[in-house]
Length: 406
Picture 1 (cartoon, rainbow, N blue to C red):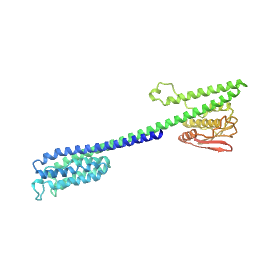
Picture 2: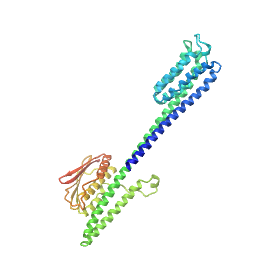
Picture 3: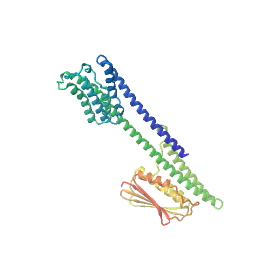
Picture 4: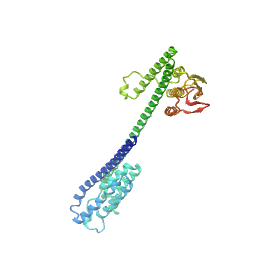
């Protein structure tokens, strides 16, 4: 089933990619066709009285050929722009009035401009400011230089001004598109960061849920098994086991409710009562007592001068102790001797939780999923610390180092 879902998802992704590709092609062709229609609106009035039928068709074919490279204007904007500027220059050279004895049929008041406008806009949107300004100046100057052919520019000032306005508009439009593209890219990057942050927070919540449920269920199962064995011979001890089960279950339910509130939209959480603070290292006595009452002897030893922990670091330390005691209760069992060693240093707290493996778990399960320890590793690293674990002298040792401030 998972493989089928993966294949379906892959097919949908390929379809979306193909649709997006065809959508871009369609939009590109539409722009080129629209530009060609605008060009024809200038071509026919300007050449109607100047060109004969065959020459007019040849000139139209030459002008139309200039629109084909526009389909690649965003892949190679400078190359396409340079080619179309040369295309325009050739037309200008053979059709503008000059001192050479060309036939009057080639002296027409028209110059193909739309292709250059579109290509210049592509250069302005896809290349740097310096490159686009150089392209703009070249697009204004080159036709004037060709049509002047050594004459003074006095008669071409109107042409320079008009060309500067039209080409300047295309250049400004391209820069506007580039600016908006950067803004869209920045917004998309911000959206990706937000999604990553949300995913990371949900992963942390999932790790919290695992820690809470695993610890509570393990302690409750141990006490239930112990109470069942002594319910006939020692009813008072069985009653104590039931009290621990009730207490641990209540505490786990409250923590689960707090975490589930975090998954709700912010608007739905606004009217709720103030959330209870996250448990920290100072709350580990609530973890130790139920484990002790299940037959695991837990000692706590602290050395050095206690420093200050940031809330996230203190919560990570709490989860280290919780996961360690859960694993000791589950895999070592009653009769195990465990030690929680807190070593305070000027800028670090080292948590070392170890057991001697001398217990007798009700049901041996040597195949650990590792999810709890891997989630714990990520939590500690996010808090700026490091963690390692492994078997030692028949037992299990976990060491976590967390940053602190003196």
